[in-house]
Image (tube, rainbow, N blue to C red):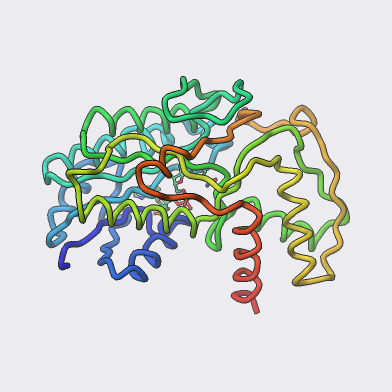
Length: 299
Ligand SMILES: NC(=O)c1ccc[n+]([C@@H]2O[C@H](COP(=O)([O-])OP(=O)(O)OC[C@H]3O[C@@H](n4cnc5c(N)ncnc54)[C@H](OP(=O)(O)O)[C@@H]3O)[C@@H](O)[C@H]2O)c1
């Protein structure tokens, strides 16, 4: 197959793993990045995509992801997360190719006590969530051949994320205070990358039978940031027994942040299983795989 899958955001945590996963699956990936392609500048989106030979699908992993900073930089967040996807959807429609776009559990307000389904009402409680919701709307209205995948609590080898922060702080401090009253689903970027590969294969092999629309994908099983941190340290100690930091549970009110976070953002992934046959691994299993890899790479 000579057709090229265009990956945007390939220097990021998810994008980098996605490029590797596409290549492992024998699919051809072309990466487009700043300054040649800036998703906030439609003229660069059009010209960069026009230069790709035989594009067949665009996967957008690019976003403004600094949740707290977005509160003081709303224009930057809306430009990348709201306008950016609109420009991509517009360019894909003109090229008559589908768009796979990544969104977030933070489109929900966290008042539910059962896992969120795709059609549940959205109501973001921070600028990042509002900007991502705007992007979802732009993709839906701009291009019918789209898949939006909402994910949550993403971690991986690249960039800053919760797992790497806990490992780093555990080496520096005796005590770590971690929020114990926010519930969600940790997701390894490699699991999500493999999910996007499977969707790409379905889109390319039988586009007529794809159910376009919005899907959820995250690690299986819910936890809290505190329990997640405890699992990280337990698992890390199996590999490096010298990791001795003590964990203290604290409530969200003890740990004020510029952006409010939903207290519950567990996602129901059954639609993904029903339409694409994808069942995410248990988050504990993926965490163990990630830590093995993390320590092997840091040797
Ligand atoms: N991280 C999480 O916990 C989490 C949770 C739920 C959903 N998500 C979603 O998952 C997706 C991937 O997140 P991630 O954590 O992998 O992101 P990330 O590591 O922060 O990477 C973001 C990527 O976007 C690129 N980018 C930012 N603004 C751009 C622009 N104007 N034009 C072109 N490229 C731009 C960055 O490129 P540069 O190298 O040029 O900066 C980088 O490659 C995002 O849609 C995010 O909203 C993330």
